Image (tube, rainbow, N blue to C red; front, side, top):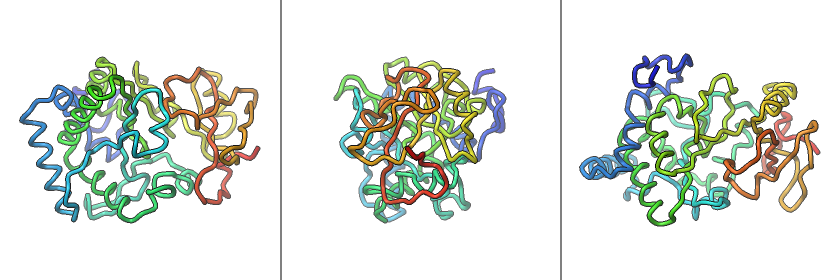
Length: 296
């Protein structure tokens, strides 16, 4: 059944979260298509809505929705120019934006939230940056169509500038975009936009989509037991795993017999071989006591 024909509660047999329902009902996917095709009246209208929304929260200028590769170190490590949607991770969005709290990473574990790079590293620790991300998140969830238009338009401009581009919608969130904006994503992919994300959802809760590459995230063993992870790897899925290794130190060569590749060299996971562990070095100052960061 096509996504557009499904109810707001279930898409392709999978129940949607509150956040996913709002994005689907608000036609985020249609906005991606209209923005990429630069439907002029919709782009100009969406920019106006974005500018007015930001002003309502004390932000004077209407900046870009997407983060460019020059502004985010991880995105800058890609074969293509990679753009990312930086939203407020986990339960960080204040209730004032939607009238209730929401969770953009519903499968996040305690260790994952504590080590999340979104609010715990780089400029993400600054209150001004957190506020800007909150405003962006509030806008995406209250004006999904307009947000989709702006993202589509920005990706089209990025293509003109760089030629080939990548798009990561879940830079620090974990929304199942293929359930709520499948047609829009398929359109971008048909226009040579490379799309990829990390996810903490189990494979049975995702709907495979050609051209959309997912890397599954290991959590502490209480959440993702070794047997669960090895089954994913044996099925040719890739698993991202942080190790207690600092910058400049080597990652282990294997984990439970599966090859470990260096995930810090590039953020473009679409180029990885199948069935490998994407090793990541420990970052930030967070002290992990959950087992989320694997010892070496």
